[in-house]
Length: 37
Image 1 (cartoon, rainbow, N blue to C red):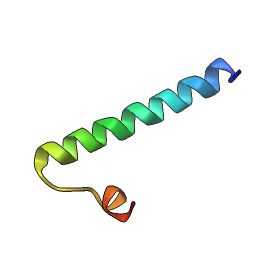
Image 2: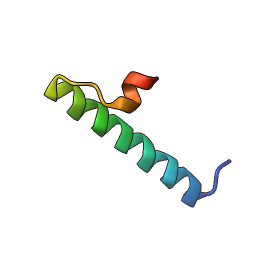
Image 3: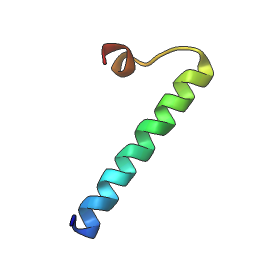
Image 4: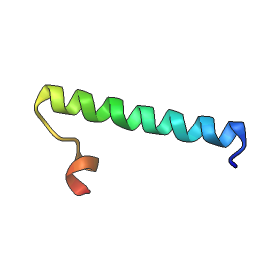
């Protein structure tokens, strides 16, 4: 089991990535990070 701090950090990162993806998709352009993947 992950410590609460680590799990919170992972969740925060996932939320940030999802937010960035949604914003980039809404604007109609893909960010360099998504394009590189």
